[in-house]
Image 1 (cartoon, rainbow, N blue to C red):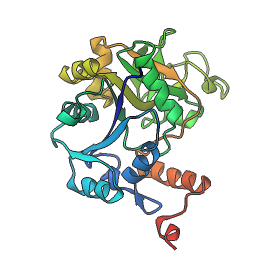
Image 2: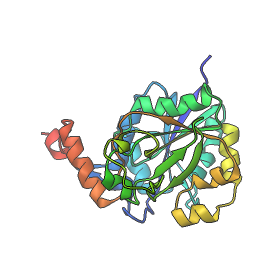
Image 3: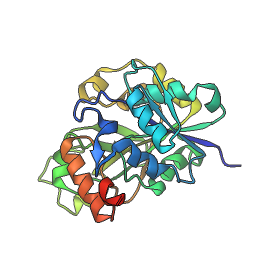
Image 4: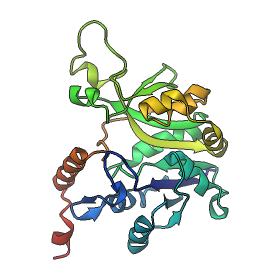
Length: 262
């Protein structure tokens, strides 16, 4: 029998690069609404809930019919917020928990499923995924998180820097279209025990320097499997990302909110 999977979308307002990120409008609709609309129908998830520290975000979720729970405003990371919710009575029976980033309005179900399979089928403690970085601009962009993985698929390091660094010459466009030049896709599937182990760890110097919480479990030796998947639209982390995402949504035929109501 397939393990039941709980999807949790952590949403906080205190983003430094894009203030009030969950409420940031894309074509007139809050970002969190786009993300919920995207993941709610996905068959790989048995239940999806938003976890937020903001009554404003909660109000948006209630308006669109998204289950939402208010969580502590003091969590240092999205994973801590996910863990708080996963411990609550209605959600304790889910053996697999998935952290779905609240800034990925074009997340693909096949990518989510790849991360889940790393845990359910391949017995990794945590599953995530990556795609070729593709562009030189993205490789150099500190907002784009890169990942290096071993031949087994195990995550070795995550960084905002262009890793792996090619000492001799510069990677070609063809080089960037394949491993080892990978962009991390911010999806995490955990066993319940792995999630609790992760949040029990203290933040580390590397995590603080890079501002990447996934370095905490990597340093502690938690086994994170990275599935290699096809192309993925980047998330929304900066105002420039938001403009690019609006253009992408238009390309996909999504009309601005005001127009869709006429």
